[in-house]
Image (cartoon, rainbow, N blue to C red; front, side):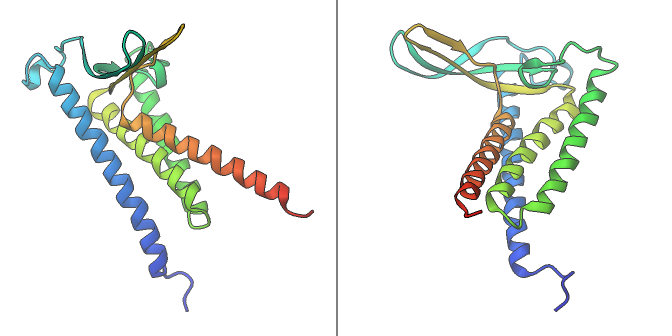
Length: 195
């Protein structure tokens, strides 16, 4: 049998990750579109920069203290937590185009090298890649990333207002956590092997 022809199992395996990628990117883009429409002053393409800077509570757990979830429309011009968002406009978008494209190429390279050997690695990399694609689309079309999920908590004396994020950010975080757990358990299992 010719080893260069992909097997049906490999095609199904890669198709599953492709469908997951497309579903997550679509979900991210639809929710960003809906969040933007909710806060825009006008639906006119010419007034896209005019929006209401407010927050709409989704739900709250607890009484005076507890956990709050809100819809808050934020235009993030930087990376996570607005990092590098103050770069000059002549540099900032192009820096993020190149940095994100390089990161996505690297993720694809690692995915095709390792995904067939380990499902969890493939899943983690697919989540990270999905998040990168979702935010990259925003950067190319809007020159900023739409963030809309706002979480705050107050538990006893511990109060924290988490930076506003989106589904793409959640995908990246989830993917990184999966890779960390997979690496941790792999190292634990290798320690148990007789040397």
